[in-house]
Image (cartoon, rainbow, N blue to C red):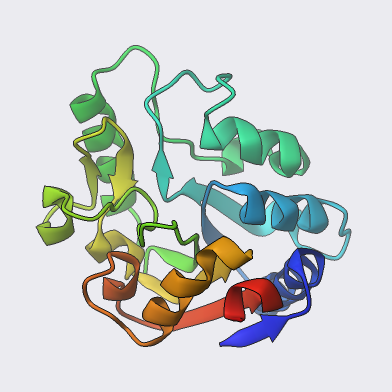
Length: 214
């Protein structure tokens, strides 16, 4: 786990890390984005950088509320306003939420992902909820047991990537900030399998601020 002084330092460090990974790769660089306040600060920090290879990045989403793309609760809207205005429109791949039922939207996004080479992503960015959820993988959800589908609709109507999709990544990065996340971060770091977040397998890296790390 890498611990930074505060959310601003965390955002700056992860922006450096992402830029280094992206610049080191010669072809397309695929990132699955997270919602939330900590990623928003990262996105704003990254948007200020001219050395990030914007023309080679491809942007996907780890989960989405089933709301219109201009809704204040939309992860896509947040990412677009914070950062994706810098990206070519064709490189942005939001989860569709207009003119489709949730199940159809999940299938469409899954079909797009299945057409990609493996691993699906170079980097998956994840948050950590105060209940231990990540993406829209919540405690007690049936989606936690899904091992075939890449994208599912949750019981609360969100669309989320499943563990097989999240784990198809070269790097999986948790971004955790704030004292309210301290207990869950400790459990994540100890790989407590009762937490949905801790069940993500693969090349997991944790970036946290001092308030969260305790």
